[in-house]
Image 1 (cartoon, rainbow, N blue to C red):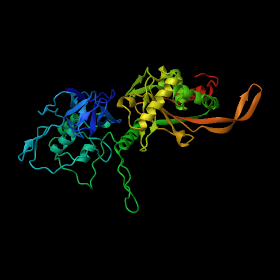
Image 2 (cartoon, one colour):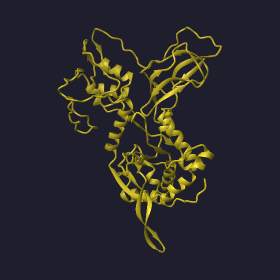
Image 3 (cartoon, rainbow, N blue to C red):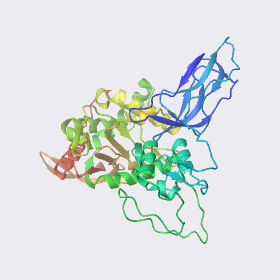
Image 4 (tube, rainbow, N blue to C red):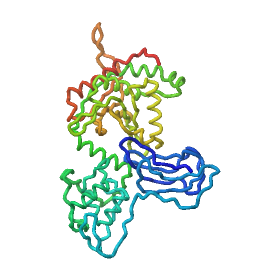
Length: 439
């Protein structure tokens, strides 16, 4: 019997939600065949089978949250007899016995025998995720959704943990656990801004579309980033004529030899990596009043998905790769991002991000920092423009390939001198590209 465990999905990911089982108990399974779909705060992914055999037992149901390392299923290998005996499943959501008489609450104080039915959705209107355990405790304790929304969470992306909820129940004491009337919104939490979104009229010719899970996560992450970091954006225009001419010259030979198409993205990443080595204080994160200087360079590249959502796969140790290695990594990650085949670990631990607004014909943009990083670069469209060409014989006007670079940075730790110098250095490396370079 082979035990299938919840795989490790990055240093900051401790659990995942089972979205969908692809195999039923008794179904035959091939080695490396997907068995189930899971979701973390970062990405949806498939879990493949480690061997060929028969699905013997599924230990969790769809919608349950499972910790990394937990056994989620058992697979009988080929020729092994499948046992009909039930297998004890790990208790993820403890069931609290219901009682019609008064019973003490988790904070020790008596609670009324009859409580109003409380409904807790897995995802709130704000996009905040609540695990089955938290929802079960909230339902048993009569904690309404509007009260849950105002409890500060200590989990990833402000996720509410069991400990957060129990601590809140203790501090709340014997206050009534009834839902507040809808017409009386609760006071904002101390860690949230004291404002609310303006009311939106839904009368007339409108269509209401619920955000999907990924869009809610993106929305939360973007709002969190703007609330965390004071953003400053600097701009510079770069002459990338040599880079364009070199790519035009080698792209057919490159594709024939390496079986890969070479885009501008690996060329941009190469320039950014060189500049980060010159200005390592851009490759950091902030922890309170401490600066965490990363000795590795992991470049995230924002990729648009067919659904219209956005994901940022990460090229790990980009400074260890040559141009061919960068090209293969860029193409591989971009292709698997579009087909939802990325592994959770492949979107973790980025130290700097590049987003290509030029792919949509935009000349520049003001990107939002991908927390916990402190800077992000937007590269605009490359366009032919008349430009002044300086030569020893004098200045002249010529047609050049020009593009704008936009750098948004966290002004808590990156001042204009560092941000501007770093951005200028990226442009310098692009402009100094060797047109006679070999591949």
